Length: 476
Image 1 (cartoon, rainbow, N blue to C red):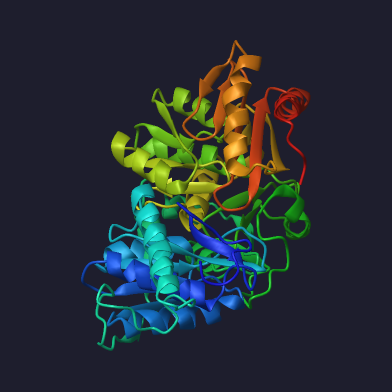
Image 2 (cartoon, rainbow, N blue to C red):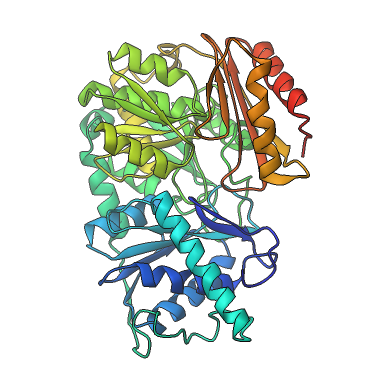
């Protein structure tokens, strides 16, 4: 890998790292060049979130792709789902999103889309990583330690010797809004007639304008908070309850029906009730899926780390719930396999097949407000229709022997819980009738994620602490 190995992580969620400690313009160039060789004919779309480091990475990607003879269509600062759906709508060869999603501001990265508007499938992601690693090995053997940074790859580089073009497209967000408005389960008429008042906390991210403009166009009275995408994040980027104090206060002060909080690339949505209290990001998917199923009955797909609330939503709708390994491309592929209209991840990521096969904060907001309008504007009542559980999301340091050592510990753990059902498709999930625990290495950070859920907070804590102790995991 060019630059210091540092924090750089590459996998099904693309490549990301701390800028200057593993991620730099050379890494961006290397991945863009390798990606170009995997794309067919046609333009490659490009977008980014507002991180200040994004412009540097954008310049490197543009220079690399145009130097390879490719046409680049720059969408500007837009959410990740906006890039994904436009990749499909415009018949592009692919798309690159410059973002580190929910990671802190010192991080950045690149996500890669295929022509269908989905993230690269796991095998394609492995191919991309292998291509970059192979180029670096060849460069090292040839005495070029900087890999592709000279911008003159050999004959394997698509379009070598030709000059590409850079174009801008300012209509991407408008297409996103149009698709969201027509999605099954979204009722813009009901929203317009409900007299809703909402606070949108954009977190200084890429959705800071598209969500308020969409809701305002639906007749919602919108108050904005942290909606200046100037490259600084005024609150922690992940919309977890502890980060939503300002939003809760704003909801109470404005007398709003709810608050909506987004992450930096606009693919996740969290909710705050009229009393200023966060509902927890797991509630977003449960409420959104329930709303979709009223208009489009059918199966629901989610990952192994998502709340049992979704099981209850599926049961209420007399349908089946399917689970996949963590990662939205895994959920998206599961949705295609099961012909599901709705799915997503419990981190506030809703996937609606009518709009885009990736997590989408804008469509999630449209579904939540449609459900709210149909329930008499009572978010607490809407929430109470779904049984509640206590969930604990914990982070631990990777063992000294790394991911391989974690894998060995996970293989041994089921023997300590003989009554549990074990699912080993992604780390280890142990399931009982009324509780579960899921332990896995993160796809996006060098940590171990441990999520437990039970009927009570004490039960979730005991389950988490017991599993961590048996595996000898240490807090970060």
